[in-house]
Image (cartoon, rainbow over all chains, first blue to last red; front, side, top):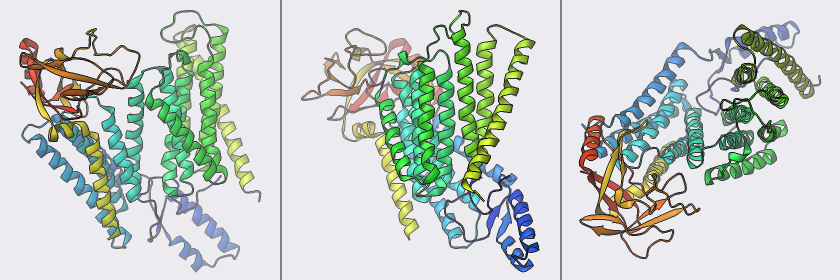
Length: 421
Length: 159
């Protein structure tokens, strides 16, 4: 059992990536662990009771997601969507220029407001870090409405992916300038939407989706590795985005109807793959210790995914094929599940080592969805009704047992290797 | 003070990004001249920017008349459409991969799935978009397209 050190901001969403001078926040579980340890050290004479009390006094209890935080983040999401909807409503009570100026004023007010609140906290004048996170996130969302309103006012043609790309670029500039995770999250999501949209608009194909997801996964993991040396608080969101994309890319690669033959390269896909290569190399060279293995691991996942795509069974059990299942189809499904389980175990182990419940939850969710999908794709062709559910249940049970055993074993081995004492 | 400078820098960079996002339309609006072109409508919705009318330009159809317009020459990149005036409306005189020496012409692009010149949509409030669609579907209409010296264009009115 490995408890996270109290005060470390490795899990949950903090407002700012630099340490705060006041008492550190810790979850009730972390505080319970600390109390137990302090009591043991006091009994052993390492600390006297006053020292133990002083150490405990350096932390305050905070739940990962209190009702207040939940409401604040929900409010941010609703207001952000509302601002963009306001653009889509095309209100003719205001001129196009008037609407642009109004939304720009709202965005600038939020941008400045977030930094005024952030400065108050940095100076120790009080304030809520969660509120700062909310206002900065809202500013990043409001910036999207400014881009879309400018485009609407100037009649930029509809369905233009570059607008989402500019929104992402702005959100990332904002995130890195003020070092905030809220705008970074907005930038990551919109950047991914832009990349996939641009690639698929140029040449829609299953293979393009696989390559785009894998390139984005490698790039995100490479950036996460670079962040282990600089601006370490940004490493977790990039790593989690990379894990999500790698699992999604492997999922797409295992679909029987995705073949390498339908790929046509376009400028966005080629650029994405090239950028991923550069960032992975930089991440592997410049990061420290075990972190450098993460981008290389994603490259390995990409290799496995491409092998699955290249494996032509001849009569894949896809939705458009009506032929009977062959031995090759069975083998493809079984190997796909096996590879996916191994990669998901890797993500879960990473979650354990990084104390990231989001990575562990992601791996668990991904494996359930993937196993269910593959089971239906194969078994639904030969059995139906109750037997199908029984077969699926047995596959899920077997996968779950394997997943848990291997995850525990690998995590324990890695922890022992890290701490031989 | 330092944080104030950071905020100002962020605001300036992000506003520059907005300018870059709409650069062709902004340039044509600020420096271009107006040309009348015949249009026909289609009426969809953009999830981020609301109701609009997709404009089809009969006078700009490529030689084969394919829909969407396409060069069909096995290449991708810039497409230039020199314009000539016929019966009060401006129509395509040619379709070329080479920039003309003199205007007026449209600078377009077929790197993605069709030739796009930045003048394919007209955004309007929902009721006005429906009204405009019905009006244009009957008798057709005229778009006022503003084009700058580099062929960058934007629609400034539809009637």
